[in-house]
Image (cartoon, rainbow, N blue to C red):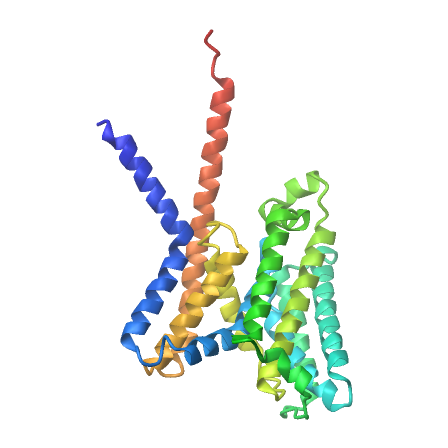
Length: 343
């Protein structure tokens, strides 16, 4: 049975390749299928541009919830943050603020929301699920109070509208999402801050023993997440050009779905930037394709909810496999150290 080890090795390599690149393969297959089903409309510049422009806010939202998720924390305030940010971005301009001052104020508010979240979690010791749900609900209440339940209208300058315009032939929001992805990739793959957050997520006790401050780094992560969510709200307002208190919450579920589904690819077993981006692309292409096939309006929330359940299950299984591989590697290393040396 000399071929058995080779077969097992090949099988392990194939399984590993599927787990790493599964989302990318699925994305390619979805593009091919929808292109064959709707050849006259799907793979066109107009449709591709529409997907890139409309789903870039979703990508920014997914990246914002990804940041604290690295440290095993959850930011349920992200959708409400986007909602109040898009309202204030137009409301402050309607009150006479210059567009750049309104944007700066919105980003500052997003950072403040992140600081409050981080403080409640690391100092007051409230669970992140409860703390961020509470701050998000407060933001929703403030948003409803500010708008009075009405649409907020104002004349927006061309410079602000250009935020969601095109750069050459590429929608600017897609470039924002790409730049944010590259920055986060560098931070989490090459800089101490990102590695510290991964350690805090994997083992808070080990992080504490190594002098990694959860108060400092988790709070910084939430501040970054809040700022990025607020920026997503600014981009969204540049697209909508009208403030609505009900807008924003619908971005929360797809954001968590993408971040969790991304944990099953590229770096299986842990949330990662490019897995999250691929998951956003898979969700966006699927929804766009279903819409072109004439799917009713309620299919999208049904699909997103189902994908969230699937993503959680797959992410848990991938994390368990990663943990098992680490345990087996530790045992092998221990066996190697304890083996007698034959001279």
